[in-house]
Amino acid sequence: MLVKMVLKMLFKATIPLLLVVGVSSYGMYMRGGDPLGMARLVLGGAFQSAKSSVQDAGESIQSVAPGSVASSKTTVYKWVDENGNTQFGSAPPEGMAAEAKTYNNNANLMTATKVQRRSSNDDQPATGMGEDGQPLPGVAGMNLPTSGDPEAMKQLLQVLQQAE
Image (cartoon, rainbow, N blue to C red; front, side, top):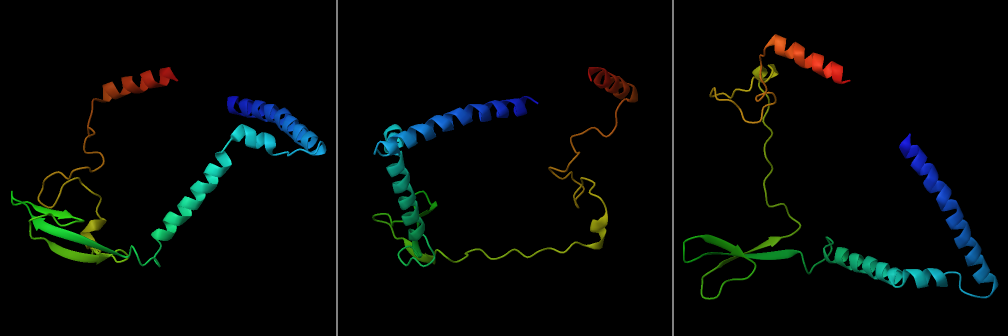
């Protein structure tokens, strides 16, 4: 109800605003002026800024397009540092032997995971226990009590019904 009333008020406020903008624009046009001059004055360089943003977005999309030859390969360097940790980077470190490997950016590097078929005993509902007899993490209902005091439940229901 409240939302409907607010929307009606916004609609009623918009109509006079559009009427004023339309009449003033037409008046400028009749006097030989530029009807969009007022909009350019109010908005400043917003139009030019939006235009340049759209052009920049188009250029960045073209730079990562599949047909782009410049960015179709990536070279990754692998080396072991003085602490024995394996490091990876886009540039080889100075004074260390590094192994370079080049990857195609448009290729999938991971192999697909095989889908495991369900066995016939999977038709049973989940009990929350794994094959080793230990509780499974994250099974729905594991943290909820499975039994409770019936009198306490009745009191809780009565309190909830009275609150309505």
